[in-house]
Image (cartoon, rainbow, N blue to C red):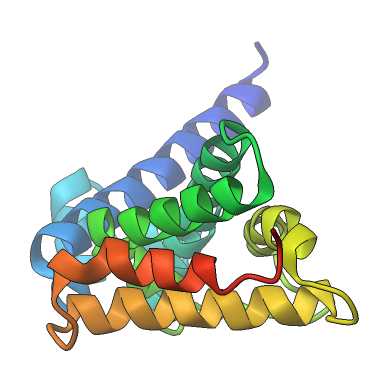
Length: 192
């Protein structure tokens, strides 16, 4: 391995450490606790080292969001692929989405609530975000119904899931009724 390759590997390892530490701190104490100073202390590097990887907290949030999007896409695809029919796939997708949001509140916030400097629904949208939407579209597109644009249907269904996730987390909806809400959504799908 050349010196250049070693330096590139070390840089990538440091970047992963910064993102993992930010994510851990955010999950434990919330995003307000994530500062470059605290991150530098936790990973035992100076703040200038952090700034050599990320210009600030906003970019760190963006990196966590991209990582979370990739994880969510993988989880949704795995759940959907284990189902036998369209309705069961959508049920599995919805459960997995809501479970991801519940288990990873800081990551979910990075993905959908906080400004991570990422473009959504544009040409320059980062691939992990496009892939997360595609993971939803793969199952939801097949149940959209006749004369319904699959992408628009996916956006509306996603918005419903996002609303359920955020309202439940905020204590506005009782969590014990989550499964009934998922069934209500799925039962209204235009597929047999």
